[in-house]
Image (cartoon, rainbow, N blue to C red; front, side):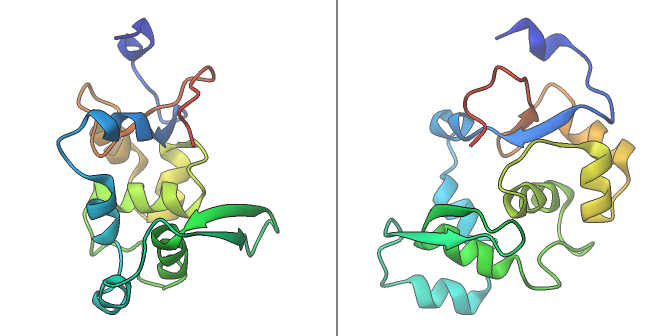
Length: 146
C-alpha cells in the first residue's frame, strides 16, 4: 500500500474508478456494469459478443474512442434522464458519474454537482479506507485511470 493512501482526502481530492482494483476483487466488473443497464438492454445483449469493439464518437467532445458492446450500451443508457438520480445508491451514482465522464478523475464537489448529492457525504463515503467498486483517490502518477 502506498503512503498516498494515508493522506486524508478533501472535497477537492479527485477520484476515479481503478480498473486494476477489479482484477483483484471477488466481484465481476462486467456483471456489475450490466446492473447499470435497463432490463430491455440486458435482454438485447444476451446473445451478443460483449467484447466486440466499436469506434464511438463522444457527443460533446467529438473524441473518438473504442468501446466494446457493453461500454456502448452503458453510453446509450447514460443518456437517460434517470441514469444518475436520487433513487439509486450513492456508490452506484458516483460510479455512473465517473462512467459518464470517461473515468476522468472528479472531486467530491464535482461529483456532488453531477449526482445531486452532498459533497461531504460523498467524501465521507468514498474517501475512507475502504474502497467501494474500485472508486479511489486519483494520484497523478496513477497509470490505471482508464
